[in-house]
Image (tube, rainbow, N blue to C red; front, side, top):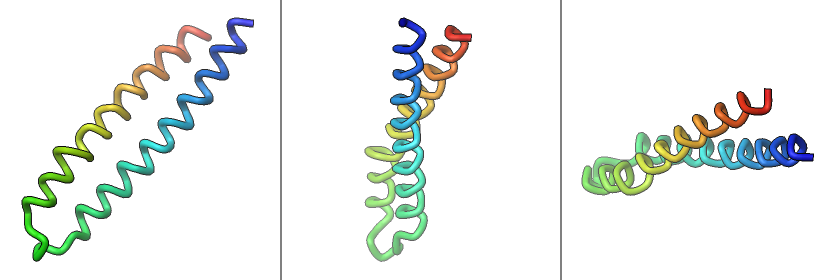
Length: 73
């Protein structure tokens, strides 16, 4: 029973990681394609306020997923 629950948690967290991956990719594309006319401050703000935190959460989730996977196997 516990293994089934852990597997369901892993699947749910894997979906969350996929969503974070997509959000990071989208933000990277937006920042890269952003016109310099909008100002570098806006690009920097997007990077520091949104992109960097999302990347760190995604990386932390990846570590968690690896640890959980190892504990199941």
